[in-house]
Image 1: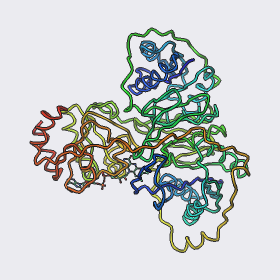
Image 2: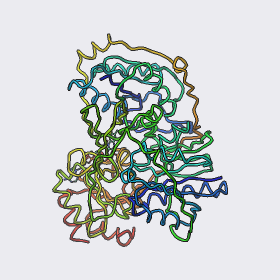
Image 3: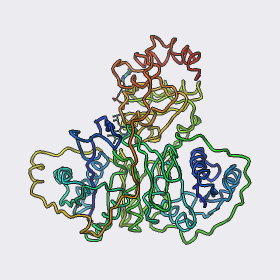
Image 4: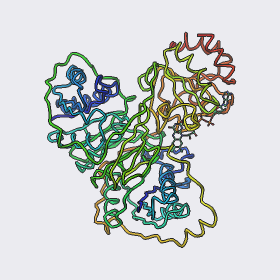
Length: 314
Length: 249
Ligand SMILES: Cc1cc2nc3c(=O)[nH]c(=O)nc-3n(C[C@H](O)[C@H](O)[C@H](O)COP(=O)(O)OP(=O)(O)OC[C@H]3O[C@@H](n4cnc5c(N)ncnc54)[C@H](O)[C@@H]3O)c2cc1C
């Protein structure tokens, strides 16, 4: 029996999230003593294929290369996976905006009910996943013959990325490229700081920051700590920072070693994205703010006074 | 163009849900129910397209128990023209939702379907993508801006790295993200008018769809609780604790 893991990458590097997804696949593989294959869909992404082949648990890499896959559409990705799905008992992707976009299409085409954002593998057909913004954890069992699954990266430690020597096999994908959906452009946030989902320390600002300029107070601290900067929905909606800063139920799910929430009240939807952080610090002038109920260390203070002090103390 | 919009009745987003003592699910007795926030955004976007003259008719669909009539009436009060309830008390999983909507679409022939990107109960984020796949239509998910021009649909999408714009042929499925618009409230006269708008009802069997659940929920448990922390008196104390107690900086 064989398991397929879909690689996520930028045509140069395999993403960290893919290694967490691979770790989930390894749990199923050890349960079923099956083999893991990884599919890399991209354009001139040979280095990604090599990284995939080097993963300790990967036995074969399927390389799907086409110019149209430089910025692939969900329609193309899903069609390629479906065309190559024969013989796989499980199909895994990361629960990123990319995985969430195309994997349900794969499920529909295979007449399978996918399982989203698993945080643990109980057995080859049973998984746990958060529901209601993480206020409950459901243990679910798939009755479909193929399991189609997205994996929440915070639930798994990264799989071993070295020591493997998988074969790389080219697959032809021309007939699966969509013509009803085309990529036009993208506006990616460029930052020298670590990515939110990969950062060990995150400092996030909320509506209490009052403006985009004031995020500078967080950025200087982030740079001293090697941290990423995040935000609440209110801060993003107000235009202080771009959408990809949002942490929460509908933003990024993070679990760093240290999460510092500044001027964030702690709505359920925000907590859903950060409450699995190892250590949580809250700085808020309202001592009744719900964020203090999940904080390991709370500081009741005006952030405009506390942040410069914190910057000086580091 | 004719639009089809979907709305789901869910536990209100302000409610802190409680897991039932027997771990069979979530306590829903006497809990406030509302339209899923992402569906509100879908309804609003459809109304704006109608106000701009892009859309001619808005059909709103809900799948679920009788009480979904209220959710549909809300959508009608906001500006949808006609409603359809696919009535069932069974749990309907996203694959079945997609199949039911596919069957409704076969009768209604809309040129665009607007749905919420996820419902805040199951948090699956699947139905729109699955519907698009069953119909072989393109999809524009997690939309923060949509524009119809020259028979094409441009969708700006919220992705992990920032924003992405794609161009779709019509018909297509769009799923909404939070920043697509800010939904309006229904006015009293419109709430009254909505009572006279058509609301058709059918059951899954009328549409020839088997909605048997494919995924079994074995149990539902509360998440691991965090232990209460401490309140520090100063920034100095905070830094000291982070360095020497938590050892995270
Ligand atoms: C469907 C849906 C999905 C959502 N998804 C998300 C999500 O993914 N992520 C998310 O974050 N939210 C999400 N939300 C929104 C969420 O419900 C809250 O509205 C939001 O998190 C509030 O952001 P905030 O804490 O920054 O703002 P507020 O709740 O306004 O809190 C601001 C805080 O700043 C404090 N403050 C103000 N000034 C100062 C000062 N000078 N010094 C110190 N403290 C100060 C205040 O005491 C207050 O506690 C979602 C909502 C819905 C309906």
